[in-house]
Amino acid sequence: MGLNSRFGAGRQARQHGAMEFSEAPVDLDIVRAYRLERLREKLREGDFAGGLFFNQLNTRYATDATNMQVWCAHYETRCVFVCTDGPVVLFDYANHPHLAEDLPGVDEYRTIPSFYFFTVAHRGPDRARIFADQIADLVQKHGGGNRRIAIDHLSMMPTEALRDKQLSLHEGEGLAELARCVKSPEELVLMRKSMDACEQGIREMHDILEPGITENALWAKLHEVNIRMGGEWIETRLLSSGPRTNPWFRECSMRPIEAGDMVSFDTDLVGPYGYCSDISRAWICGAKPTDEQRRLYAKAFEQIEHNIGILGPGRSFRDVTMDAWSIPEEFLSNRYASCMHGVGLADEYPSIKHRADFDAKGYDGVFEPGMVVCVESFIGVEGGREGVKLEEQVIITETGVERMSSYPFETDWL
Image (cartoon, rainbow, N blue to C red; front, side):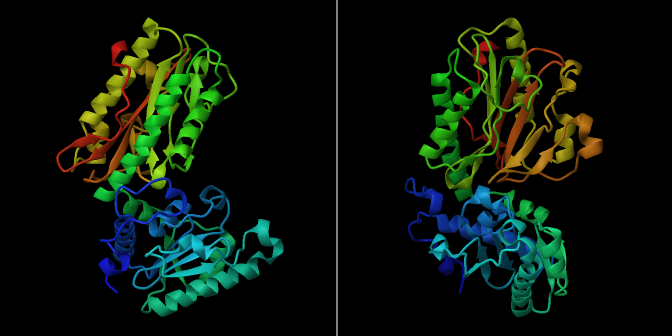
């Protein structure tokens, strides 16, 4: 059956799982068809019979089926096998076929013969062999003699069981990341819906920020709004205040925020439709900023704006690294881990390094229209009291960039 007929591109978008909060703004079947075809395109390029994806983000990307995604991320208990030329088989945690009803990209629903220790203990090897038998059978039936499969991640025991079936196993995480990095126009609409939830959460956080509120209580507001508006989870707990803002990466705590404290945060929010909104802002609690707070903020803002300005289609990762804002020596040791990174269902390829880190960690590539990029900054002096974390999310377009986030910066501080 042809792609358009299978995916019903013209019919009204269905609601599914965590996405029932409202009417979808686009036909979700068009998104599902695009994503599955992106995966298959990469599988064909690599000459694979199929791809086995245990990463719950890749399973979501391939099928749009969800089932306790955070919980299932802890265990090898749920996956999808995508035949390059054949069916898509969802192996679910338990027998709950209603979770994949009406999803046009799922051709067959099976319960996985679980092999992880928690559920089967010493019986794991036998269960892994049952699973390997099923994958080998799919490859035999639909691989046309090709026994090469891509796998995103899998532990040793089931890996050996698959190899015992004379399957040729190859790295598949990068394949999936490359498939996911270019978004369709419909995906961008869904990403904007996620950003709407994220920015509403930020507004409500700002409304309740006052001296005495704890970091945890402030952060909880973002979670509450995200869930209320149809979002799914938040990847981190990156909110801190006052002296806990420098160096970065302290997670939020029971510390009461004091008047005059800098408050910095990074959303990492997986919102409606499973798409991530990843922006950062910094505020002052209950007071006007000091000259030093203004200076730090101005440098962070300058870095963000400069680095957005050098982005565009066809630019190489290396050239962007070399043209990026030069971090002053006083802030270099506490710099953020990357200059910018891709985002979709989560933080994704590519990760663009700072000039100081390129030789050791960097890699080259090209920005393409449809990529979504988060531009990062952390500015804090080593040994200084506070730091400023800012981040902006932009789309690479055919002609330049478009900002996806619209929550304002504190430009009156500049």
